[in-house]
Each structure stands twice: as C-alpha cells, then as structure tokens.
Length: 416
Image 1 (cartoon, rainbow, N blue to C red):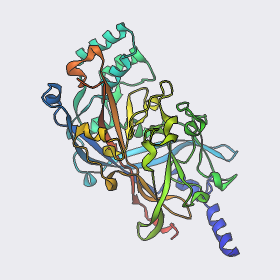
Image 2 (cartoon, rainbow, N blue to C red):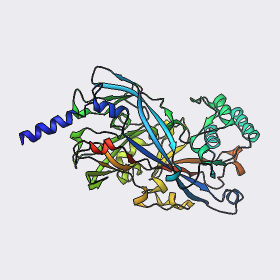
Image 3 (cartoon, rainbow, N blue to C red):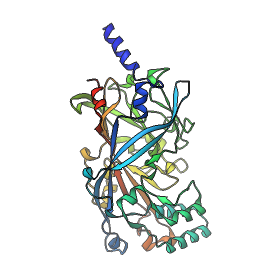
Image 4 (cartoon, rainbow, N blue to C red):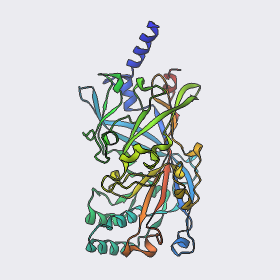
C-alpha cells in the first residue's frame, strides 16, 4: 500500500505545471484537437410569418458544419507565486469530410445586429431611436437575413454596426459580426490559474479573469466568483463520485457543475468516469432555488426554465443560452417554434474523465445560442417579426465541441 501511494503521488506530481516540464508543454500546446460541430437553424417560413399567414416560425436544423480547433496558450507568464497567466489562441480549420453541408450553404437566420439594436433602442432617446430607424431603412435591414453559413458563423461586414457604435458605444470596435468570430484567433481575456506547485488541490483552478476574481454580473459571491477550470484538466483530489467538478465558460458568463453519472470505457478501452451537467442548471428559481443568483442583477427578473441570460457578457445584446432544442426547457419554449425536437442522447452535455489523472478523454459540450426579440413601437410590423407577443425567443445555432481527434502520443501516455 505504501509503495502504491508513493507511486500515485509521484505520478500526480508529473501533472504540476512547472515551467519547461512535459505537463506544461502539453498544457501550452495540447496534443488533442477538439472538433467544433456547429448546427444552424434555418428559418423556412419568415415571409409567411411576417405576412401573418403562419402563426409560428418554422426551423430546420442544418449541419453539423465541422471544424478542427487547434488551441494553444500564448503570452504565458509564470508569476513565481504558484500561478500562471496566459491568453488563448485558437486556429479553426474546416473539415468538409466530417461536415453535413457546405460552408457556402445559404441560410435564413435572425439578424442579430438589427435585433440587438432594436432591443437597445427601447431605453434610448427619441432622437437616437429615429436615427437608428433611418439607418435600418437605408441598409434595408430587417429581423431576418439570408447569409452563407460561413459568413454567419465567422463574420461578415455589417454597416449597422458603424451606426450602433456611434449611437450606443458599449465596446463595439468592429463593423464585422459573426456568431463565433471571437473564437477564431487570440482571446481578449487574460486568465490566471494555479499551477499546482503550491498545492495539487488547486491545479488548473482559475484564480482571476483579467486580473479580477469576480465577474461583477451576479448577486452572490459563489455565483459571481470565477473558479473551476477551463475543462482541460481538474485537480486529481476532486475525482470523487460524491463531489462535483466545475468548469468555467467565459462566453456563458459562469461556472457550470459537472456531476458524476457512471463508469464508462472511452477511446480504446480506457476506463473513465462520466460526468454530466445537471438538468437543473438552467431551471427557473421556482424549480431550483440556487439559480436565483443568476436572475437579472437590476430587475431581478428570471427567464423561463431552459434559458440563461448571457447579455452581460454579450455587450448587452439580448442573448440567451440553452441546451440544444431546449432540452430540459419549459414546454412553452419548445412549442413556440416548429421543428424543435429535444433528445437527451443528442443534446445533453457530458465529459468522460480519467479517474486518476483527472483530464477529459472524451465528451461533448452542447449549448444553443438564442436571441430574444422585443417589440418596439417604431419598429413594429415587417421589421420586428413580433406581432402579438411582448417578446419571443428565436434560435440561432448550437454547437457541441467534442474531443474526438487524438495524437498517438496522447494515447500512448494515457494510464489505464
């Protein structure tokens, strides 16, 4: 037993992120390449809906459009106090052989820039509202638009952004917009994590985001504090079936719990523990009281079960996250638009994690991005696509990054 413990301790010490170590090299340039699989909702009856002939919008789930993601840490600084600071750089490569569709497929999708401008205009002066209205007329902008999938995902020029920059400011620095545009290239955020040198119990835990321990978005310290890991490594001591793991996802403004589910066999027979995000993570506080801290900071309002407000980290745009096809969501969300079919096996999030070394071997992180459309007097009628409801949620896309491409060295060095 003593020899076994000594071996385990020696093995775990190899995970510490010391400068110039093998662990640090793997952490900086991971020998595993996630597949980014993007699904886009194509709206098939916008003309009929806007004309009042159809009472519901109809969508078809297109894709996946698959991309290989090469990620590495840049601007890495070993701070000398048991922490490391860095930025992330991602390079995206389209994989036609893995995709169901082509990057130039034309899709009808919500015009996120226009709808965001409409939402922001609700609280602006009449002068600004009229200015934005004139800009949308000149640009012939409306609630829906037709774009190639590639442009919608990774970026296209939008003249309305120039107008929005002058009217609203709010950190708008480019006239290019794409749903995942910021995912390709170097991140704007600076992360600081624990290296594990001071204590393995803190290995890979995020200490600061842009030098701050809090997001300044949520009501309580527990919800607002950064923490957890980025999902590529966990502290080994947390591998306990009764103890949750935590993953921090900056684009979704929060930490997410991962709960033990079962023992599985991953890849070529490697034993792993499967963890899942619990079904209550997007539940309304009436159904899951701890979620009250995620209600709107000023108004205290909460979206229905299945939706999570991420406008705080989306430059104020009325963007909401959910599971794909509103899996686990309120039935009214599913019934509001035709073409939505939630299926657990397709739409839940899970991670298969090595029980000793505490890094993921396989998994799928599946989230859907939605935008809330709100009615505004001078934008009523054709342009808003909202006639009878005060607000309606329309779907944009969903994406399940999954660990499916492995290098030989990764497999060879994974302990069974």
